[in-house]
Image 1 (cartoon, rainbow, N blue to C red):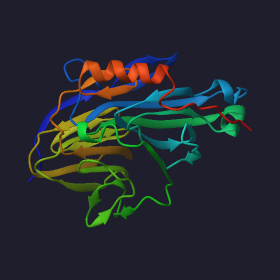
Image 2 (image 1 turned 45 degrees about the horizontal axis):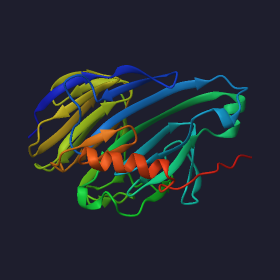
Image 3 (image 1 turned 30 degrees about the vertical axis):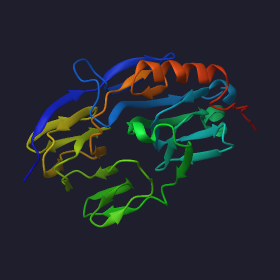
Length: 287
C-alpha cells in the first residue's frame, strides 16, 4: 500500500550570505518534519579565479544536532576543532554530530575555486534527543565508494544511513532513520517501504515523475503521512532524489542560529560557551 501524501511544497529561494539557495524546509506553515529541521540545496557554477580562503563558509560553531551534507557535484572540504580535515567529493557525504559543541568550516576544493566548475550539494539538519545533545561531537566522511548501493533496472539507490532491503548504511544515528539518495532514469520505477512510525520526505533535485499517484517536478518536497506503506516513484524524466525518513523525537525544539536545543536557557548557554571558546577553536589550513 502506498503512503498517503500530506503535502507537496516547492522549494523557496533564500539568500544565504549573498548566495541564492533552494530551501524546501522550513517554509511558511511548516517549521520542521521531526526529526528533520532544515534542508538547503546549493547549486551553482563557480566562475574561477577565486581565492579558496574566501569561498564557502568559514569557522562557525554548532551544538545539539547533526548537520549532514550530501555532495552531488564538486566537493566540500571540512575542517574542525577536533583536528579533522577531509575533502569529500561527488557522491559522498559529510556526516557531523555537533553534540556538546564543535567549530568547523566548509570550503570548496582549491582547483574548483581557481579553475571554476559545477558545485552542488544539499545540507540538512537532523535533530537528536535531549539525552544525547551534550554527548561528544564526532565527524565521519563517507565517500561514494563507501556508500552501499542498490542497483535496479533503471535506478540506483545509495544507503547513507539506516537500512533498505537488508543492506545497512554507513552513518550512525541516535534515533532510527533511513537516509537515501538516488537516481531514476526516464521510464524507471522505485518502491521504498517505510515503517509506520517514521516521518518521511522525498525531495527531487531535478527531473519529474509520479510519486504515489501525484505529479511532481524538480525542487518539490513531498511530505508523507506517518503510516506504514511504500513510497513509489515513476520517472518521466531522468531524476535525482533524496529521501529522508525517521522516527520523530517528539520534544520541544529551541533553535537559534547554529544551535538546536530544547529550551531558551540551553540556547543562551550555548551562545556563552561558543563566545568563551568552549566549542573549540579552528585555525584553518590552506595549501
